[in-house]
Length: 122
Image (cartoon, rainbow, N blue to C red; front, side):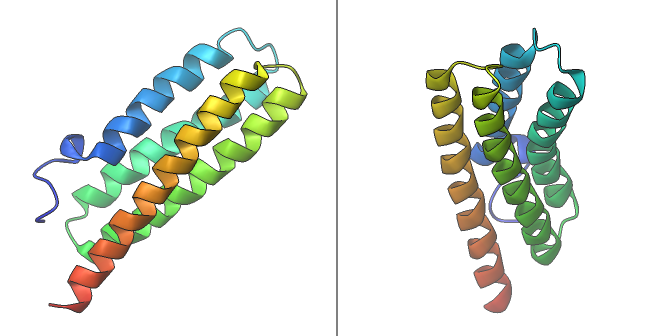
């Protein structure tokens, strides 16, 4: 695949990894364990779907897994509103995370489009 040699080289994977750490740290003291588990799992899903799709080695499969990762990024953004409303996270921190997840989703979508375009031009 021409976009990277390893999934670890992808900027979208690197950013998703950083966001996993940030979400885990921010939710660490939340006593609502089911909420904490869900937002952490959704965040991990972004990172893991990027990696899994890359390892599939076809552009079509990779693009599909990027779509899943993008969907999980949207789920996290939605949950950040709930976390803010429930006072599990400060509004400024929730805003910062939402912006980063929105930017990440845009980048993931762009990469998926590039993959589909490259696949169509084969």
